[in-house]
Length: 269
Ligand code: SF4
Image (cartoon, rainbow, N blue to C red; front, side, top):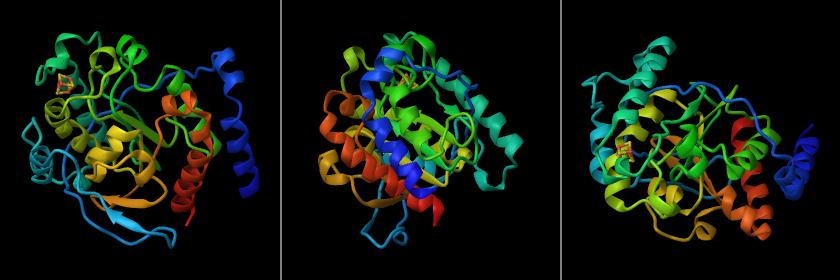
């Protein structure tokens, strides 16, 4: 069973041409919503390797989240809320994101991209920000890179439709796909903290340098950060390359495969 999954993932990672030409697409679930809590905290290793504590990126935003202060003024801990209430708050959050003007990215977006998936997921995937396809659809990771990401998840029995949630550091597309500016990431970070608290993921998978650096709180290359487990607010966090980077550089497929196995090892222990 284990080997079948590993073989399947490796095949998928080597099957880029097929899926690029095939236009693999899935139906999309409705976006969910969220509240707040937590600051980063250390914890035990998940696989006998090194485990590090992620401190979170924008300290000011993290402090707000740690205090449990949502824009809706709901200070109660998300863990006290039942699933229906957490879904309702995620919907409220999505509405706030859609109308948000807290940073200049609202001026150039077509649609804000709050996030999508299920609550209590096995994994919450966090990228840096929407691209052109996401900006047009209002849904995260639906372009080529997103379809590739779906295959990574599928290879270890994860799906945004049944046991995963997907979001980004910034909810509006940075022009020309540039990196989010620090002020933009900081302005948007409370939304992500709300999402994490409401969604309550078992693990976090950060994809790409920007999201990994921000959540881990270290500004090393993704090649240096990946390959180990961190902790973010007590949640095991595995960083890996961004699927778009792997599409450009097939040499990243092997480390991604290792990172997905690492993630799976946490989920199955
Ligand atoms: S990126 Fe975030 S903070 Fe900036 S306008 Fe969009 S939702 Fe608001």
